[in-house]
Structures are given as C-alpha cells and as structure tokens.
Image (cartoon, rainbow, N blue to C red; front, side):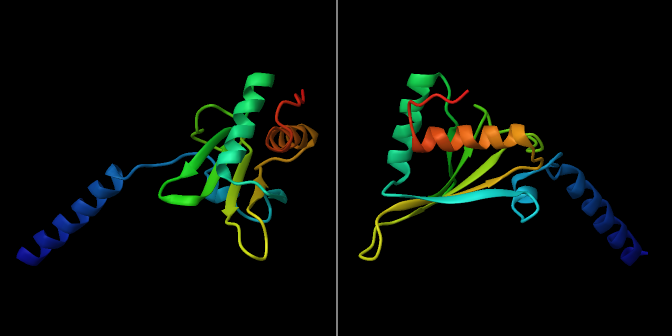
Length: 144
C-alpha cells in the first residue's frame, strides 16, 4: 500500500511538473536551423559586431528601419538579426539571421559569418533577405 501511494505521488508530481513547464508554440529558431529552411550564407570581411551595429544604427537613421541586433546570452561571438523590434513568439513568418563573429588572426582579418533561415521561401522572402543584408553591407542605402 505504501509503495502504491509513493508511485501515485511520483506520477502526480510528474504530471504537475509537465503542466508547469513553459510551452512554446509555433515555429522556434531551433526548428528553422536545418537545410530545408536554409536560404543563404555569406561572410563579410573586416567587420566585427560593434562595426555591424554601427552600420545598423546608421541605416536606421537614414532609412527609418534596420534589423534588430540581439546578442546571444553569455556568447560574445554569436548574435541574431530580426526584422521586427521584438523577438517573435513564432518564427513561421520571420526571417532568422544567425551571426558568428570571428576574431582577427595572423591568417585573416576580423569577419562575421551570416546564415539566413526562413520557414517559407518565395520572391517576397528573398526581397526581405536582400533588404536585411543591404542594411548590414550598405548602411544608408534604402532598399524598399
């Protein structure tokens, strides 16, 4: 009887813990990071995250819009770009841009790798990707 009560208590605790766990709905970044949703990648030389952020600030001042730059928590070499001011709950209609900052070395200058993912892909998505990359590469050149 005691064993049965212990087992029931463990099951009830597991069910309650499952209910308390945060649930995410919709498409999440980890769902996008695969070859099916991969759009493009590029490497921009002689730039680091501070210079990239300056480009985005300059672009926002000139064009009224720039993607949002968000550092990954506790990761100084990793960041993301989002089209929206807020990080979305679902990435189904959001373009996800992963950034990796590589330090300068005797073999190569500082640089940033850009990998772009999107749940859907069509001409509109490609225009949005081009707009994001233009803001990074050519700050102040406003692409509609």
